[in-house]
Amino acid sequence: MNPTTPALRYAFALLACLWIGSAWSNEAPKPPKAGIASANLLATDAGHQILAAGGNAFDAAVAVAAVLGVVEPESSGFGGGGFFLLRRASDGKTVMVDAREKAPMAATRDMYLDENGEAVAGRSRNGPLAAGIPGQPAGLVHLAENYGRLPLAQSLAPAIKLAAEGFPFGKKNHALIGFRVDILAQSPAAAAVFLRDGQAPEIGTMIVQPDLARTLQALADQGNAGFYAGEVAKTMVAGVRAAGGIWTEQDLADYRVVERAPMVTQYQDYQVITAPPPSSGGVALATIFNILNGYEYENLSPLLQNHLLIEAMRRAYRDRAIYLGDPDFVQVPTEMLLHPHYAAGLRASIRLDRATPSDALPGIETEPGGTDTTHFSIIDRDGNLVAATLSVNLPYGSAFMAPDTGILLNNEMDDFSAKAGTPNAYGLVGEDANAVGPGKRPLSSMTPTFLVGPDRTAVIGTPGGSRIITMVLLGALTLIDGGSAADAVARPRIHHQYKPDAVSTEPGAIDADGVAALSEMGHVVSPNERTWGNMHVVVWDRADDRVDAASDPRWEGVGKAEVK
Ligand code: GLY
Image (cartoon, rainbow, N blue to C red):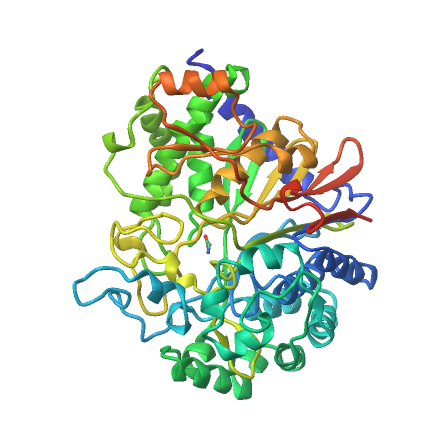
């Protein structure tokens, strides 16, 4: 490898950065059409309806997120939270609205441990004790009030209608409820909405949510006061506490979104703009890109490319476990982790002919994660961008619905490290940085991302727990390499998260010879029959004056990408 190459590439990247800055002025061209890609066709349609009514991408984001919260309760909702990455075309302002849930003030570091000091998984995953204070309602109010053109009530209207009139229970709702039927059955309000005779509803069953419609109308009419104060707040807190939870009305009254500066890194001639802590996604993505920046990655053999990807993933997930947490509570050494010298140090520990056993790096135990959460991508005709990844954590969140409110609560508290070194539902472990603390946000893997190159702007993200980061990485590499939105979402995936020390592969990701060669190098390759993720991408090719969008083929017929 030519040692001068990384320096030259770095210089080129800086020039590209300057170019991008100028491209984001008022003189910048506008997209010929708007693109929206989301996990549900009703949500994508609602977003386009709001654009057609004169709204911008941020109004559309309110509509899409709200509809997803009604029709995709397994993945996100008003009882959950998430990250909205925004870029406003008029002034180039790029910001992440952090609407992540917060631990209630009565939360304690050891609240999920038993008398022997062992983590009790059920406590942080099921029922109201598992729920953080929701951020999504405040996130939508913030978007409408600070970035949108339309009144909040107008952007929420499609969701309110679907809650009041019902939506047909679909393939994905059904596929994921199987994991949570027993827990949903323990919450009478949740069971009344989502179960039929204690069982999963048939596909096509109409799910009507009158309580949710009422709560959303209060949010539409009163903004934050309609959810975080007054009757709705009182009723939610009473329901939570009656079922063993620890929320107070003050917790709700005190909830605020935070605007955070996005994490920006450079790969080849692309600026990668992504989620900062309390997401681990941006730091991990930047670490991996920084490692790859030291090689002529695109010119390597597929075997070496896969080897380097795995080694970079291994190191990024190790750092995730050790260093990352809520930046409002812990000192996250972001500057160190993103420094080119740090990446050079990580590169120095990578052999090109052998896998590094994860045990050669300080150890944690993990197991693979599942599919949940949701993501949508929007580019409007003004060039405004939204990448939003929203979550209730596991399918159907905590499976607890606060009676009379229609709000299905998240179980995002499981994203804390209940006990140092003990894996959460995604097999991820953490240390003190991500310990439970009152008012703290749990570390997330959600990685909404913009890619900005000389001729192309892309919006990308996906659900998938601990695998989100590696999925966004692979999708981004495809797009940077010139692939289409459809190529990026369809690309077969590989994943390594440090522990367990194994590479998961989707069918078709690595052929038999590739698996044999990686095994020969010391990698443990664990081919999966199943697939993961649900990626939604919108691409604006500025040189061709073309907007393209694609939804993940793994959920064919459920998601919808549409350019209008
Ligand atoms: N609840 C999934 C995540 O935030 O990573």
